[in-house]
Structures are given as structure tokens and as C-alpha cells.
Image 1 (cartoon, rainbow, N blue to C red):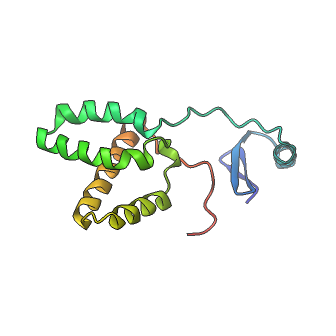
Image 2: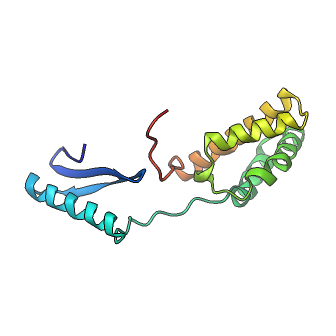
Image 3: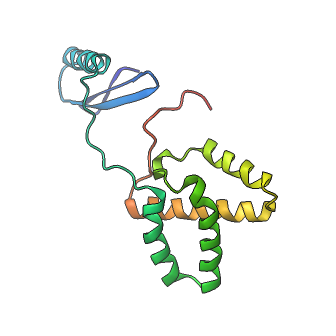
Amino acid sequence: MSIYQRGKVWWYEFVDHGERYRGAIGKVSKTMAREVETRKKAEVAEGRYKPPSKKPSLRLDEFIEDYFAYYRTNRKPRSVKRHEVSWHAVQPVLGAKRLDEIAPLDLERYRRQRKQSDVSDVTVNRELAFLKHLYTMAIKWSGARPQRTRSRTSD
């Protein structure tokens, strides 16, 4: 679907080299919407496309400070300690990545790496549960889900 209409507003959406581009065109005729969409595709092909500025996602090691500040005030010390132990295991592998850059494949690699180092399944599951809660809070606090910039072509 290249252009489509919602209400009275026309929208464009296309994929180029695995990257999804979409946006509102406005209340114009269908012919004008097609022209705008063609111009957008040409801009992308020529490398002139300037996507709307998005606030970059925080790195995991930047977000963790806010997360632990919250967690220490709202949880028991033993739970905090468990999360800190999980963080020390996760940090070398995923700490420098941005929240929106961590993909399911990264988590699977992390799981495999931890199992190869003779860590129990329970420990690995707790570390992944820690990451899940961290993401839940990031989504809750930002008001939006961290989004990947590439579209998925197959599952």
C-alpha cells in the first residue's frame, strides 16, 4: 500500500532497502497525494530524505540509573539486590546498546552465552525477567513503545 486515505487526510507508506517510510500528506486530492509520494520516494533514492526528527532512545546503561532509583524506593532490598546482580550480568553484553536497538536475536544470543557459561536456567530467566520489567517501565515512562527503525519483512 503506497498511499491511502484516513478520513480526509492522505498518507504515504513505502519500504526502501528494508527501511519503512510513512507520513501524512494532508487534505489534498488523490493525484496530488500520488505526486507527493513519488517525490518522497525520489528523495529517499537520492539520499535527500530528512525523516522527522525523533528523540533518540536512551542507552540501556543511561536508563538504568532512573530505573534503579525507582526500584530502590518501591521494592524490598532483597529484590533490588537480585536486580543489581542481573544488571551486572547483562551490562557487558547489552549495556552500551540503545533501548530501541536491542532485538529478540540479541536476547537469544545473551541466553545462549549465559547457558554456555554454566549458569542455571533459573538465573537466566531471572535476568531476562529483569530486562522485561526494565522495558515495561521504559514504555510506561516514555508514553510510547521504543520502536525499531527497520520494518520486519518476515516473522
